[in-house]
Image (cartoon, rainbow, N blue to C red; front, side, top):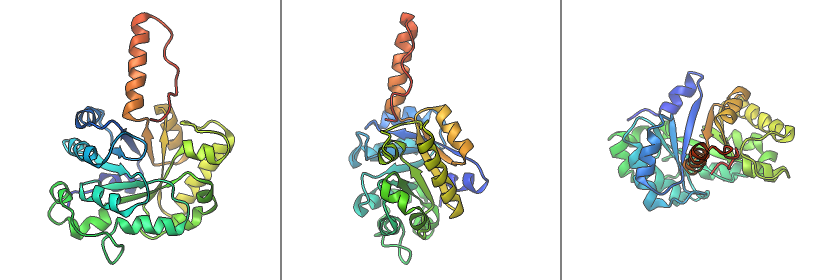
Length: 263
């Protein structure tokens, strides 16, 4: 089976730079591939992507050695299993609030006896190899999103869930949960202190801390804090920022305002 490079990077103590695909286009994903990311995540939650457009995005990512991931719209086993069968090498699941929800998510990603994933890997066999079924449980990466007030009350219970590999902070929803409003790159000490606690709790339980950011500078700050996985904006935000910068530079006007948001 094709190795999951994310596991190799983390085992060596390294950090992963992740890209984000929210434009429902295989061609746009193929353009994103040119960036040389460690991984690319297809966003089915807040992006414009549904399953029928997620598939060509995964195919475009497969033209490279970039690891394909997917964020599902909800903790629903049907879509989780379909995306794994389509070749996603990891699943990011939003709004995980407690241990029971995390167990339901993780087990949807694992074949028996470690879970209840139904067998039918289809494209995953073509992408990963004919021995996919034998190694999938040890190769696929599971990310539980930490972004709600209940999750903050249940950090240890969530992060000690058997089979959970990583957590992923959604800073916008986390900001809402903390009463500070949605943010891309947190600056308030309250939010930063919470993110430090999340990061430290993940490491205590031997899982990988990850997060979403709105800039390369924000991603580097999160790496310095101890996070080992960071998304830098999304294809939509990168396109908007580049377009604004190009027009401003051509007209000789002030550059675009920073921080157009993570999406």
